[in-house]
Figure (spheres, each protein chain N blue to C red):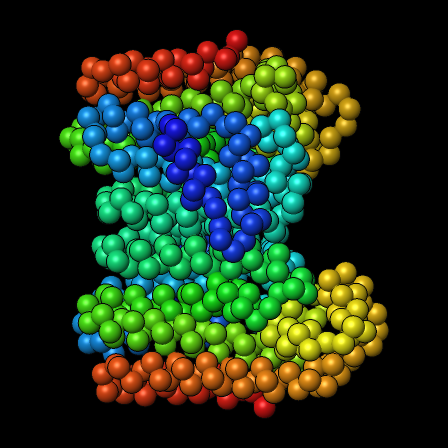
Length: 312
Length: 312
């Protein structure tokens, strides 16, 4: 990971435009979990890789992630990220859009340097899935007809596609057998889904000191996530009108968040959501069984447990 | 070009997010000049290419161009493009940012399909130059210390990098000799610079019916372009204060555009700018001499003449 961090520092530089490293450093140094590059390194080493391209791929994946965060904050008009003001607030939307584009193009240069067309294919497809998921979320988020299938598609786009690409390219660069590459993809996909469901659940029951977000942000931002989708699916006519007013029309008043939480409690949807997250984490650990017995496999197993351990 | 247009239509579709083709169609169907994909097709055919990958590369280049237009309009807060309202006005900034990201990822998929690492390398580098140029423009545009060298860097980023990549990849896919590939790069680079200088000049002396823009838009948007940079370089202390107030501080009042035009007339900077555009167009035609004698070479020659023929 030290080599990855060094490479990130080197490649986020710009000879001509000092605004670029300023904005990037704000995010990169904010102490993200570096989960995605770690997954790439782990997958490559687990499959016995002894070269150095996995460092480039790990930096690639982190650059793609950082680029999407910059664009997300513009799209969501967010003011906070990782407990600090967002780049669009500190600088402006222009900087976030353009520096995001720059990081995406830098990630593209890095992956080309590995010389693997299979890696490029995986990351090109992941990029398209991510972008499509973001657009889908924009149109589906405040629409009450959004069901669990659409939610899953959005989650694959916004989170799981990069997790699964991160693990898959680690296996590809190590020239692992096809069944192991598939297992790495499946692990990353399930881990990413578990991770995002857990995140969406914590929005309603998390400790705001630990998550750096306020309880109910998604409700206030009119974003349908799994706990609400499950409540909408069982809603009485009157309850449906409540969701229409608060989510679809965005006409929220004091006490509405409490009412939303009461409806989720009525149908026990927070617990049902937690069970979904646990199932996806279990699917992630199941996928690992095909992979070589190795301390890193144990670590990936523990990571899947950890992702859902934050849930009550 | 019909095959390119068909491919663009097919690939801009999205199974899940209908917003994507809506926004893209608005731009793609607005009747852009399709200059960049045409350059790729021309370069490949001029070098005797008989395969079909040049179609994919032409669509790639147009997708990158469309993606940058979508992001530019957000960054510039533009209201008009090609004589129609911009996507960020018709939909919103979110759509423009995310659909731009989607098109960029689609372009990436298309180029991977050609299987040429050299092509991927060229387009990755062009993407980074484009993004870096955009960030540089953002910080340099309203700064009076921006000189002709920085202007040229910005122009290479915002325009010439994609022109030169468009022609270069045409030669690469045709497996042309290195000196021909270099000539194609040089032609695209010089053509792009001539094109952008002409555009910046027409902002001050163009017919707004023909250009679809109002005279002096760049002045009002506090964008330093070549005609003003040349006037600033020769300014008296009093004139410098005028430029500081209007461009750096953006405090503009009625009559300021007329005063700006008078200062450009005083130093004859519109004519000096026109001479620069003519020199770059000449450099473009010079680069062509290395290439095979072919009707397409004549067409590329005429194109370089055409780009500057709009200038008085």
